[in-house]
Picture 1 (cartoon, rainbow, N blue to C red):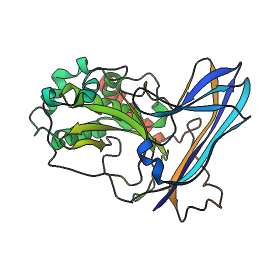
Picture 2 (tube, one colour):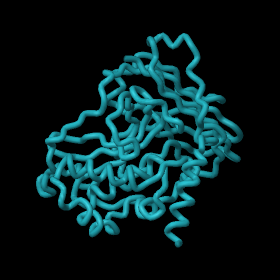
Picture 3 (cartoon, rainbow, N blue to C red):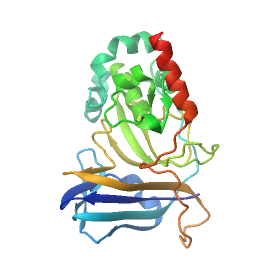
Picture 4 (cartoon, rainbow, N blue to C red):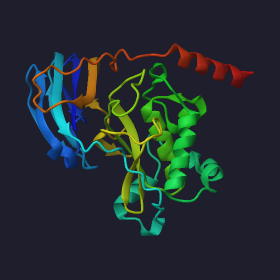
Length: 305
């Protein structure tokens, strides 16, 4: 199947400002891109592609003073299969883990593993180690948190998400990653494009998502605590210890984000002769659910009374 995906970013800087973007498709999937346009900047600036310490492809540029628009549009070939489920995959003892997995056992900016050890073992220590234990973590996080863009925060850590019981996809991933690491399961944060393919349309669509990967017997596997079901059409962009390692855009100076639209959907062919579908929801003006807001207020009231 073909998947159309891309973005439109608007940024305003008071002076020339260095910027990096973590929006390029991972190297392993580049061969599947059948057509692409961009990234294109307006005004035109020089772009350099570099690889960070985690192996992610990044684009580095100097944003000029004033407004700049960055766009990208592409079609990728996808096998149409959902995320694999390998229920028999077991854990690997720490002493036998590959060296490159070890950084994903430690705490990080948003994942305070030292605060979760006792709780993690109490909740999940009795579950068969391996796939079943990670799935139990996903089930717990999925039920624990209430999703709403109205409660998004760039500063919320795993501990705060667990206490506040609200968040967006990055908070679900951070909390699940933290539980896994506290149980000696290597876990890394990942993000990328993922539309509503093969599922009912989400009333809160946002085609750039965060999930996580764990290292079990056989390698790294995808888990998604927010959606908590295998999904079709996941296009990974970047991986790191948590969101601090792979921000969508990172400027080395003050900036205003004026536009951020993302689209991901099945396409009939790779011709790209039609304009991409309009992104109704953006990171600047996201969809908000009053029902979710009411639920959160009720939870806060019950905790206080």
